[in-house]
Image (cartoon, rainbow, N blue to C red; front, side):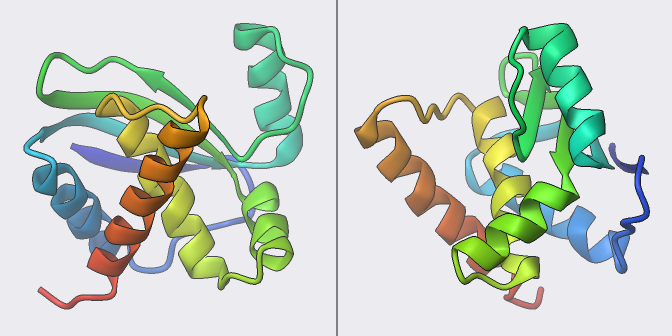
Amino acid sequence: MIEFHFESEFVLEDKTKYSDWITRVVETESFSVGQLDYVFCSDSYLLNINQKYLNHDTFTDIITFDYSNEKTLSGDIFISTERVMDNAETYKASREDELLRVMSHGLLHLMGFKDKSEDERSVMRAKEAEKIKLFHVEH
């Protein structure tokens, strides 16, 4: 089950379109959907989580907590919509595509993709771009 929670003024317009896309993203990597909870929040909300659970005192666009079981993805994916909007401007991306990038980034982490080394980041960016394209394809 895919659920969306809003801890800020941000709201996803067409939740079904996003749910269908997330399911396609998961299935293209031969995983299945367990319980995925996306929490859209502010910078301060996510900073608090970062400090409390990860001992990091920095702003970030996403934090993912993994509860997956083998090939069934489950997790809590917290996204700062403030960071997403700022990053869209910084990187000259549309707000929608930057949101999709971050949403898919969390899923890719749940699938085992990393982004610590340059090679890992390169693979992660390619996968993100591939998954964003899936959103823009009508099924």
